[in-house]
Each structure stands twice: as C-alpha cells, then as structure tokens.
Length: 114
Image (tube, rainbow, N blue to C red):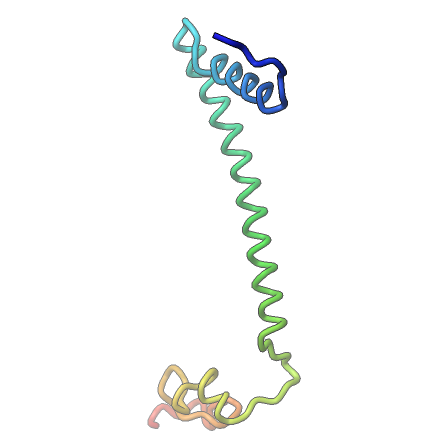
C-alpha cells in the first residue's frame, strides 16, 4: 500500500481529529472514558451556545434593518383613519368591544353599556 507523498493541511487536520477522538472515546477504564466524553460534550455545548447567540443576534439585526427599510413608522408620523382601523382598532372597536375614534381612544372609557 502506498502512502501519501506529502502531508497537506487536510491530512494533518484529519489525523489530529482522529487522535483526539481516539483519546476521548477509547480507554481501558470505563470511568475515565465517560469523564472524557462528558468533557467533550460540555465543550461542544459551549461552542453551540456561543454560535446560537451569534445567530440570534444576526437575526435580530436583520429584522431591525428590514423594519427600517420596509415601512417602519416613527411615532411622529401621521396615520390615516384606514390604517388605524386596520392596525390599532379592528372594525373601530377595542378589545372589549367599545367603539373608538380615529386615534384608537375610547370616547367614554367608563361606559360599559355600548
């Protein structure tokens, strides 16, 4: 069987990963073998946790940029009556069923008969 003439980076990396796996998963003493496996699992969980935080923060930033580009309204911008009815008070009523005006406020908040 012929061997590789040169040792490339991929060859060295594969050999190192194989040696690390053999060190962690093969031992004559089962207790030591399980301790090594737990250490590897904890390290993998830490790496995954950091990756999840990075991915979540990237998704939040994409959402913020999308809101900024596609129709975020600052509080100072005026809304038309149709937009208030659609977003703030569907069908001109609040969640208790009381009629509201164009700004989404109830005319008489203490009146429960309407």
